[in-house]
Image (cartoon, rainbow, N blue to C red):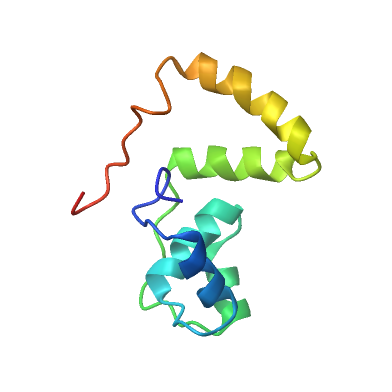
Length: 105
């Protein structure tokens, strides 16, 4: 999420949002919708969150990530690892050196 949207959330934070123990804000609805590849207005309607203004279209990176995630859903963990290895090598940089450009980092 942090790489394709302006939001960084830990796995623990995603879990508490999913469990309803933390508020789901309009901003988060928009970012989750982009990553899931669904319309933010539909996700807002499903979750009961009111969007104060029409959402902007998701970034191209988010659309691509959602497409890849959707296609990867059928793979087992070992198969996903076999896909990830060549994908990381095609990226041309080391995952160790990869930096997230998040505000405040």
